[in-house]
Amino acid sequence: MAEILFGAPVAAAIRERSKTESDALRAAGIVPCLAVVRIGDRPDTASYAAGLEKGAPKSGVEIRRIELPETVPQEEAARTLDGLDRDPSVHGILLLSPLPKHLDADLLRNRIAPEKDADCASDLSLAGVFSKNGTGPAPATARAVMEILRFYGIPTEGRRAAVIGRSQVVGRPLAMLLLRGNATVTICHSRTPDLGAVLREADIVVAALGRPEAIGAAVLGEGQVIVDVGIHRKEDGHLCGDVDQAEAAPLARAITPVPGGVGAVTSAVLLRQVVESAARTH
Ligand code: NAP
Image 1 (cartoon, rainbow, N blue to C red):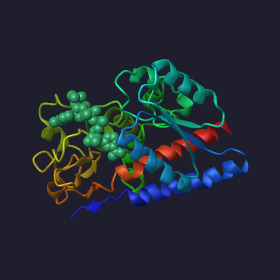
Image 2: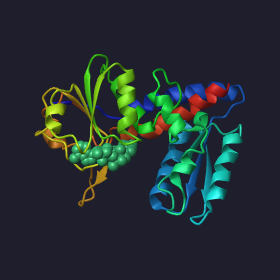
Image 3: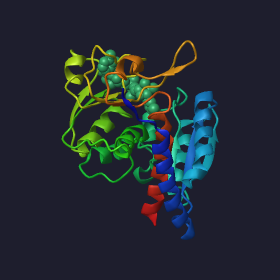
Image 4: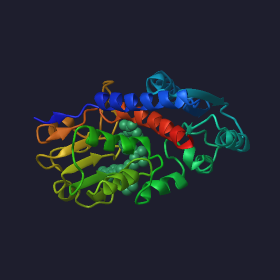
């Protein structure tokens, strides 16, 4: 049976590192601060912001909440982000999405200064992920996958990794991080003709396709490390991932659970990137 790669100990270790570094920064007069910009009153962005706020003290990060009304004009939203870019007491900016329809999301996310872009949302920040030795932030979910592999001592060097999904927030940047870890990476997507033929060749399979329990025994091999990035609520109220865990776990060498896997690590990584950004200003 597969080793279960729980996210909680990974997140705890990341938070501990962040807290130690934050304490040193605070002693030097720098309080790592994340500005969370929320536009409108969606319950999903509210619960995400509340979760971050709850976890922030354990990482030594202060949260500054910025709430803008649903009808905020584009120029005002842009001015708010510009102000945070200029504010030296803010080290990270997170613009919660989705945004109201009248706003230009691409324009706003590209307004965030790369050095403060806590979730690596702008094109300029992403360019850092695609560069060979990028030192800036990475999209938190993509980095969370790498942190899990590192924590559990799963090497990427020389291994074949298959990433299912090529989105700007997960699949693409993750493929670049794996490549930086010297894996041989294949990116699969909805036009990949024979998914099973690619996946069965891989040592590490990362599922980030956004299809509940779509990856199962029919496309997987034996003895693989499987990382399930997906998160969905089923009709019965339970959460599931993009991997059919019941089929995959008996085949796998190791597998991340859902819930309690990648999702448990993402916010710790996001807050870690705020502390790293604060340290760069020091
Ligand atoms: P997305 O933007 O919808 O992208 C999905 C990707 O999967 C696309 O590239 C798509 O291909 C590909 N795809 C869709 N169906 C496929 C199929 N049958 N076979 C192969 N590839 C297929 O999704 P996302 O935002 O990257 O999110 C991916 C998953 O991660 C979702 O389940 C989401 O809920 C989860 N997520 C989790 C966290 C976390 O913290 N745990 C954070 C963010 C997202 P095309 O490009 O060809 O359309």
